[in-house]
Length: 139
Image (cartoon, rainbow, N blue to C red; front, side, top):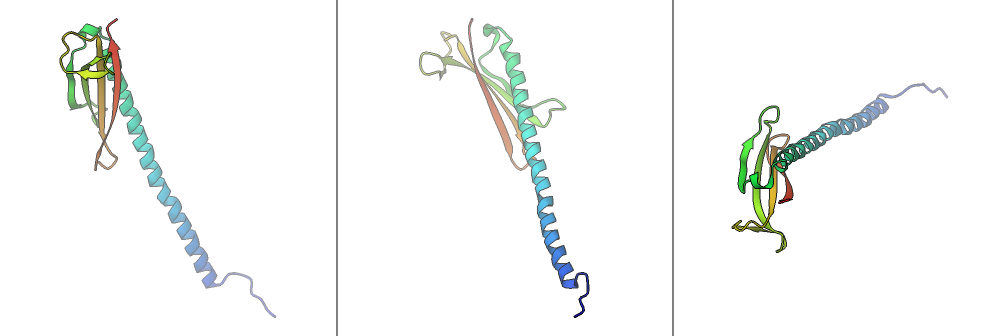
């Protein structure tokens, strides 16, 4: 009996099809990984922008920290113009479960600072945000 060495055309086509399906799956993972990486990068940067504003406010004396919306939601300056930030300061009563006080007279000697940072998702279809909160008391 005589055997030829090599592949038939059918075997070659089947192996190319299997290889193509495998490569397609691998190539689909790259854009997803890039999207996840970019999303986490934006979330990290937004938390740093919020923390930066928090440190700026806390550096002031208690009396100089005004009650109300200190910073309306606005677009930040370049290179951070992809982000928006809003800052609100409220009075808090430490004796009643840290609830917000509408009238700050007399001063309960505790303020709550809330900083929200907003950014668009990778394709701009929706908006994501983080909120950083901190309490400050009169020393």
